[in-house]
Image 1: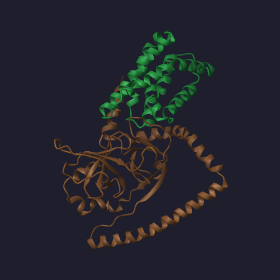
Image 2: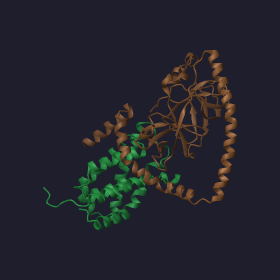
Image 3: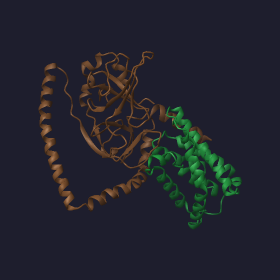
Image 4: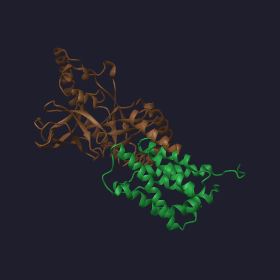
Length: 163
Length: 287
């Protein structure tokens, strides 16, 4: 039904691939636990900006990619990503108009939700991490990164005319 | 919402039945360029180091390696004599012959995986003849086994992963048991040792070959802690793997030669003892 042709699909793919690379780049031990969910952050941006193009399906597939790259159970991240994407696509008009700091708060909640599902899966399969830090740190780091990522990806989207 | 159901279904299938190895292989192969990309700086560094190494240093290294090779050959000669003697004795005893294993050298790929799992990625895959559940060794002993397979690389689970159990044998007494990973690097647990068992700090653990996955006789680790508590059915026994699992870079993949259907596990003394059935089944991953 849309008259506007979609453009810049490659730019979205590229940003997701870069996010996947950031997930497996080796880091020193202390930074490893604080590694934010790059792929989910980038997905959140695209779901907010272009909910008609990037939605639950793309998020789920990216989650599967993360699972394969990190050696998790297939669907462990896919589940969380799909849930989060569903919420964002439903509420994108509301979240979009929030000021940045308030958006960061919503992002924290969404990241925690995704983290909760994957930790829940880990727990069910008998590998719950022992430190409480592991539950919150990646999400908090992700929240702190959000305003910068938002600015960067907005510039990126306009630069390459993704619509 | 269907995707949520599909996710749960996928996870269940993957976890319980291991039916999805082919799907995973395809995905892993598609995504393996990303891993190569991440590993690129490391490889570039290696390459630069090799290319710009001074002639003097190369000469020194060459001389060193020559000397080392001579030493190794000398000890190999002794080994050859021992091997022959062993074969002769085994014939005398009527026991089956041991099959020598072939190995494939691989390198670890410098990518981080899930911090809650003890997995590593190696740069050999299906195309190099790697197969699932193939044992992974380093120079000092056993590291783990291949868990997922891509076309050009593979993911291996380390013996310290909490879902990994390895059939082992105490080298001094020959007692067979199971070593489980704890999730802590460089720490293994032996959960089924009775309080009156003959086990001491410093005992060497070697693979027992039961379960048919790991070849027999490779060092696994050393007992570092034995705690006897008469109130509990089993002693608390902790071992340290002989390989620094977070250090080693080059690994060996042991090629399985099952033409003689695992002569070691089929040896009569291996099956006669009580409790060996326990060990034989736990060679599989217990998740």
